[in-house]
Length: 383
Ligand SMILES: C[S@@+](CC[C@H](N)C(=O)[O-])C[C@H]1O[C@@H](n2cnc3c(N)ncnc32)[C@H](O)[C@@H]1O
Image (cartoon, helix red, strand yellow):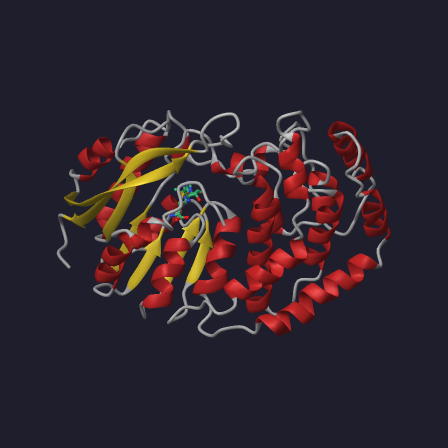
């Protein structure tokens, strides 16, 4: 799945080698801002050291847990039968599915089509949160009811349940009708209407099956675990035998604004209330990060670096080298870190970064940038 600030491509580009070379020297690898989980997966699959993945958002820790907590492959065909086929069977017998299926006629003007989809999805559903909250907005009625049946039929066994939930999260991010993330759905205008139709044609069951096929064979060499929390609150659990990876937000806009649909899926509540064009849950349901707040990010950075230095952990830190919209920059991070750490500038990687909402139609979806990789060794402890 695509994730804002993901390090997936950098793993093949110098970051991966550094992580592996350093991780073997420590007892544990801690990914404090785990995001899409690519870094946690990468280390857990290759090195026999436990990985601890932390993020404010539950969808992130579910994605991580689906791989890093498991030490054996799972059977994708069995899960497909036990879960996807069962969800499909129940969905196909349901009243809302029949209504949604009957409705799926795109041969009308896009605004009317979308308006009718929204009206249909106001019909009360107790199956899951997606139909009422996001049907006709981020998902077509048939997609929305399919997600609800997938969530309602997750396996009971924890390992399988987490993996299937991760497959749902990845599938939702592939199907969602919004520009790159889930901050705002596409609206049925002349320009954006075609993107809605394109997204709404994607089949969640097929994609979920593919995501199961991708996730099932991925597992850790030794079991790891996850914590859904503010990274600052996890610092007390660190020690000098930890290698900590820090890849904090670079934007002054909260991740929970962009990924609330995935968070709703991860939380698996039966019902949620949403409002506005973006169909946001209330602010209390959307985790707020000091790192995504321009007036708090600098203090948050100082606090976390000081705390980790006191614990004697070593850090690999990545961040865009220029100025970021949350007020942090590569130079600022180096200057602050040098108070407590010996700062080694390992590499600067040219990359592309999300412009947060561009879709190539309105503005560029990705901008060129370069990203620093710093190795920070605590001045007080030598490993
Ligand atoms: C740049 S992304 C990480 C990307 C990740 N390394 C990857 O490759 O997918 C930053 C992540 O930090 C998380 N985050 C923001 N503030 C946080 C905090 N205070 N504690 C823990 N996680 C936080 C966000 O939810 C987001 O997932």
